[in-house]
Image 1 (cartoon, rainbow, N blue to C red):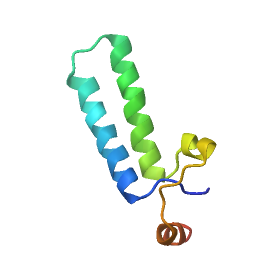
Image 2 (image 1 turned 60 degrees about the vertical axis):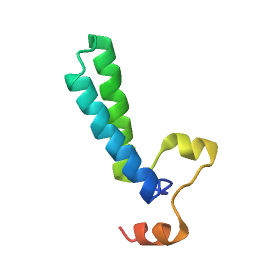
Image 3 (image 1 turned 180 degrees about the horizontal axis):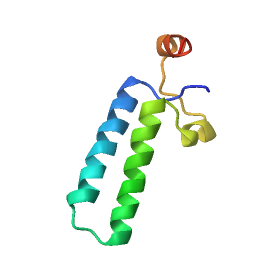
Image 4 (image 1 turned 180 degrees about the vertical axis):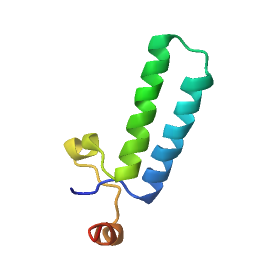
Length: 75
């Protein structure tokens, strides 16, 4: 898999994923609102965790710098 999510982008995605999870859990939203927030939280956290975003690939965006690409290719 080709990585396209860099360090700062990864940290923001994972932090927002965790934050959205807590909003969904404690926010007192409707059932559909809670499910929507949980889905967004999961997408943010998982794309940060695996360093890959399908939308970034679709639009040709890459926030992963060259040194990180080399480091991550050894996984």
